[in-house]
Length: 204
Image (cartoon, rainbow, N blue to C red; front, side, top):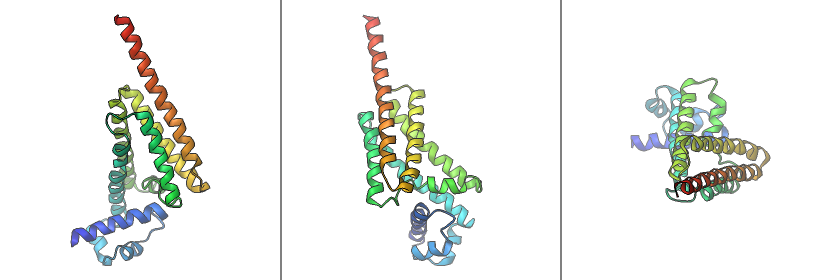
């Protein structure tokens, strides 16, 4: 029972933070929508809303991080995966009426200068996403340095595109960012293949 209550508080908070931000979400609203006793929030999170916020960031980050594995399947074409990754993000925005974007970015913009524990949680999540994407690109045969550059570029492009898309209520920013990132990955793959072919010719 206690575990279920804690999970409801975290899940409800994640949804509220994503839709309306951290500062605009009150503790009373969280416990009301989670159908939890008011005192339960402080029972599970003695540090209050800030501790809850850091927990929600890590929980949401792990959940959304699974999307990288879902799109960048080992052995799959990373160029197609990159295109599908951004296309999926655009589709989600349309289906949720632009309410469901990145669960971390909304909070990160609010708290990174005011809450060190929450800033650290955001940094950990973003770093884990970059690391995961980097590994998938390395597995495709790209050099690690170039893979990390591409991973950071994809994440930065997607997060920026989310901001523009939600403000303009258009998926065009996500689609354009996706096309640019897909082209970058395609160029990197082509360069790796050309280098491999040149090395093969030298050996003959």
